[in-house]
Length: 418
Image (tube, rainbow, N blue to C red; front, side):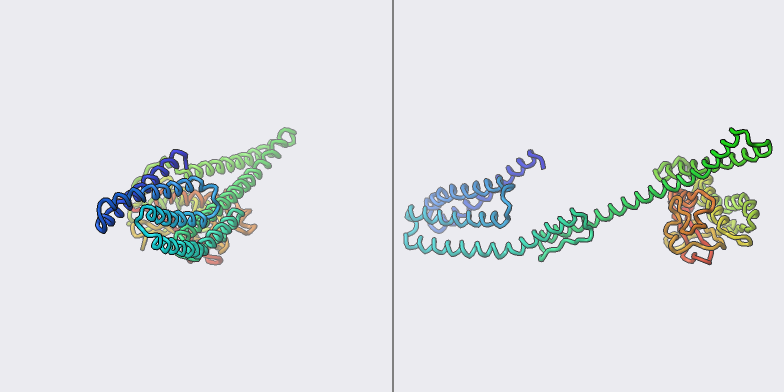
C-alpha cells in the first residue's frame, strides 16, 4: 500500500470518527434537553466533547503506531480502557460541576471499576480462541513457505479468520496446481529436447559417416550412388522432422493462417485412402473406406484435414501387422457432438497399452515399450493431428473400446457446415 493511499485511508477514518462523535453528542444533548433543559444539555456537550475527542485522538495515535504493536489483544484492551477511562473522567467532571453528589459519583466509579475488571477479563476470554487461530494460521503459512503443499489452514470458529483460512487454502491449492503444471511443462520440455536430439543424432551420424567415406575416396561409383540415395533419405527425414516441429509450434501458438470451407468428407477420405494404399500393400495391410457419400458437409480446411487423416492412417498402418486391416468410418455425432461429424480410424494392430493411452497425443511419445520407441516416425503425427482438430473446434480421442490385443480406435469430430 502506498503512502498516499495510507494517508487517504487515515483521513477517511478520522472523518468517520468525528461523525460518530458528533452523532453521539447530538443524541446526548437531545436526551439531556428532554430530561432536564437546554442549558444542562449545552453544559453536558461542552463537558463530554473534549473527553470524546481526546479518546478518539488517543485511539488514532495508537493506530499510527500499529506496526510497533505485536499484540492484537493489547490494542483491544486499549480500546476498552479508553472507553472506560472516558466514563470515569466524565463522572469526575460531573462531580466538580455539581451534577452528581460525591456519594453517587463514588458508587458510579466503583461500578465502572468493576466493569473494567470484568471487561478486560471478557476481552481475554474472547481473544483466547482468536489468538490460537492466528497462531495456527501462522504455523500453517510457515509450512507453506517451507514447501509443504499438503497443509490445510483451519480455525476453531466460523468468523473472518475462518474466511481468511479458506482463502489461504485456495491459494495453496492454486500454488500446488501451478507448480505441478510447471513441473509437468518442464518435464515435457526435457522429453521433447531428448527426443529431438535422438531423432537428429541418428541421421546426422549416418550422414557424417557417409561424408567421411566419400572424402576418403573409398567408394566405387555404384556404392557412391547408393550412399547418395541414403543421404537423400536422411535429409528428407530431417526436413520432415523440422517441418513437423515448425507446424506444431505454430499450432500451439495459435498461429492459424488457413481458411475454412465446406468439405465433402466422403471424397476427401476416398482420396486420402487411395494415396495410402501403396504403402499399406507394401506391408500387406488392407485399407478400407466406409464413409457414406451422403454424409453431411464439414466445415474445415481440406489440406489440414487431409493431414490429420494421413497422420492417423500412417500411424495405423505402421502398427498393423501383415494381413491386418485399417478401416475409416464416419457418421453424425451423438450427444454433445450432435452438431458435428465424427470420423473414426480403426486398425487391427496390437493396440495401445493402458499405461500409454493418456500420453499418445503428446509430442514424440511412442509408447513405453522398446519396440515402440524404435519404430519409424517422428512421434509428432498424433500431436499435430490433435492440434489441427482442436483448431477446427473439434476434439480427438482414443475410443473407450480400444486397448491391448484389440487394435486401436481413434475418433475425432469436426463441426458441420452451416
